[in-house]
Length: 350
Image 1 (cartoon, rainbow, N blue to C red):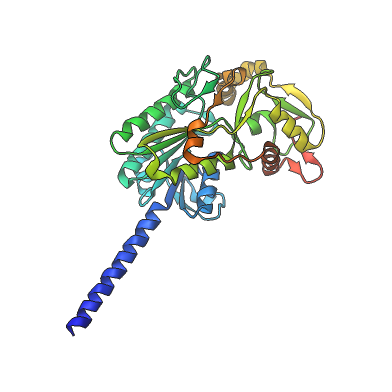
Image 2: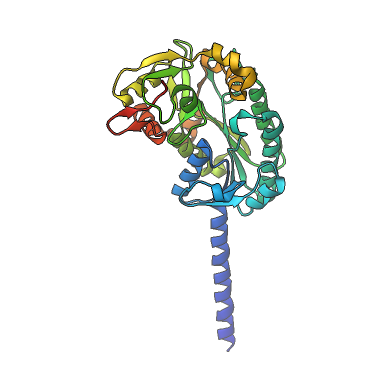
């Protein structure tokens, strides 16, 4: 009788241990993605699902959420701290990929949203992943940028980006871990809020010409979103090796003189295109009436000077950087934007 009682106690203890282990494993594999309807947020959500993570994404109206296999949508507003804290319960990672739509109201929205994420990470113990940009670096910066390069922003958005990283660094001293991965201009299947889709090509339009925003001979960096998402996920999964506040540069596709990207688009189209320069003077004339044009003008310097990201630290840490060949990445992007058909070619701006 005593032996049977002892056996039951042992079995119960074993089952409790296994249950706690399972809960722990699930917790360490749960991610909350803020901004999953955007390019990098959506790419990260898909990549994490593919790597076996449980992914929860927060959106104001879950009924309007896009269908992403393996993603659970929950209602909430990134401006409401209590919403983000509640959505992050049990998460080991919070992806902070949320930005105001159309570049509007950065000054009043961006920092409060990050404050909500920091509060949620403090409550859940999750690590924050912030997709970084080169906005931190102002005009006149060194042409090759390392993680430790001086940040002297020359735009309002750049100053906000610098402050965002400062907030994460300050929070790290209080036990909130974070990871920043800086990259160049995004492009990828289904990603429409970027220079590739809004400045160079127009989804769904018949192909007649290609618009390029950069100055002749000036290099430009591009980040193919599936490669960037894979890199970020690999870094996150090296959690114990990461610092409390860590920064990495993703090199992506470096176009040394601004011709590699346009040539790849022409190859995808299967014919030569009429090349046009972005009419910056028109944007200047219309800027008083359209927020997007004002914001584009503010970042023009990034197309007039080279900003190449040095990924030596990333290579030492991971051993390699995911790198889809440019022609393949461009073709998949154009197909994803609905502007490249199987036989007819691509739809770019007239």
